[in-house]
Image (cartoon, rainbow, N blue to C red; front, side, top):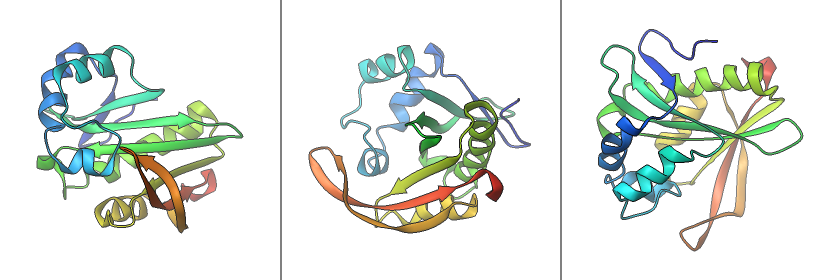
Length: 166
């Protein structure tokens, strides 16, 4: 299965992505909503590329190959797959994250036998909530003190997508 549409491609990260990853993660919005460390260093990017978590993919422009973001799937048992993503500032508002999320969800069903894909966002991260909804994920509710990010317990808005929703 090719992980691409007419605008983006999902592919494995390579050492050549390190400078673009470092540049992208200087944007304070990425570590604000994710577990990406701040400050983010070249060593962080090299470690990430050398041992990416689970099924991590670079989101790249299909024509230029330029890095537009990252998306990953983490199987956590019972057919559940947790999805996370970030997109570079220049790619936001162009549907890149929504496209990547749709591609990854189909892939997770076909390749990981996902019975349920889920993602969570910070209650204040309305942009990520819009991405989830546009990709077909359904809002399930707010989970109190669901996740610890950078030493702080935070609520999370949970979204899910089932294979029959695709």
